[in-house]
Length: 168
Image (tube, rainbow, N blue to C red):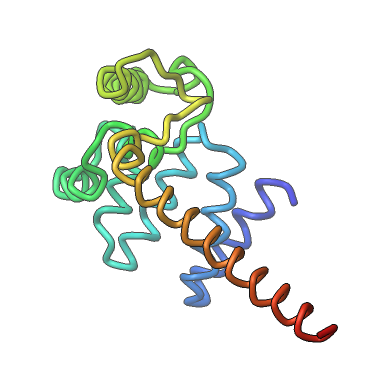
């Protein structure tokens, strides 16, 4: 469906009080057009209707006229640079942003993420940011795998025992 038609449906949904449907349509549009700042602004307006300042701050993060409280709520929810980078869901280089402020914000988030990861990152390969957590869970993953192996071996032993008993 063309962008204009979908935006018309968003307007109709909002006029009819179908805010969740409008939000879903806008989320889909932002997913399809991640570099469109006007769509991000519209989505932030819908999240304001929900009373979700962190999400409104997320989608207004690249706008100069953003609300400081919403920005703080966004930064509190997404505390690390990799989390913010993933949450912003930008695609392509910063130069695709229409405003200088947005380009500066995107560059700052990417630079902070690069520092946090210890290597250069870009918007098309956003890191998971779970390096420290994944190191801690490697042992837990090993234990889970070992437990599954023990369960499978026990099942096979019981099955073989039953098969031997059947022919005895």
